[in-house]
Image (cartoon, rainbow, N blue to C red; front, side):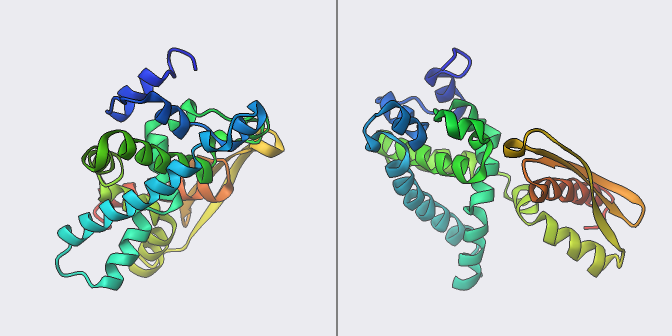
Length: 233
């Protein structure tokens, strides 16, 4: 790692200093790296991810139980699923720029693994598992509260942006809308898509992403923020 993306810099970013920094290195290590370097498989993040997933489920369940006294079991389950699903954890991981600290094999690097939701969401859970092993439940809970369970209103708006926008425009405002692909660039394995969303002929938001769906989601989120500022939602 460069100094900019060192273990120390990552500790600063996540707000926790490890007693055993090898745990954090392991959390940042993809199996493609250990395979290429012929390192023992247990030194990648998969076991820590398994543990972190369980810790995250417990902390988020307790949070929702305490914060939503009248919600049924079914509603709580549905809300937890949206909070800790792959796209939402990837969103949190990108806020922390965890992808930049990862150790990837050359093949995974070349195919865009550093920005792939499935990988960086796993890394987010692995960091939680590493903090739990190193510092116990309270430190893991503080990390989850700070980086996963904060700003839930805006995060929920982002997670459900495409369906929420459709509901607002077609259901509430009774307006037609459409997405338009503005640009597609980059090699086949690492494309970048730029998309705009229009309410009839009015531009509401633009987004970009490694998939067309991700770009549409970001565009829809920008549109929802604009409509919220206008008092439409």
